Length: 108
Image (tube, rainbow, N blue to C red; front, side, top):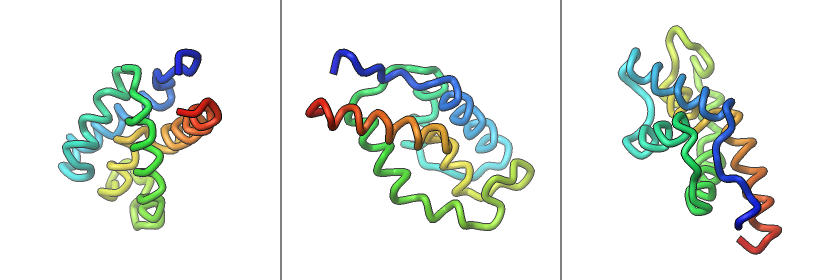
């Protein structure tokens, strides 16, 4: 959809960059797919519609991770917290869901 900007916001990019930093520092959280997603998000590369849909699916499947001990703890983060950040964190979830609604309304 030409009029829908698929470039991650600064908040999404910042969350993904933080996820990469925490993963490196604590040696846990996320898969290679999550790391690749974080690299694209943190570089603010425009995503495909399919990737936005994958992000929506990821957040829907992993919202239970937010209930884990140490979710949100930057000093001793849970693996789920690191993974959540790799996908753009709460900002990524909001951004992807908003884009999904726009794309769906346009038949995407």
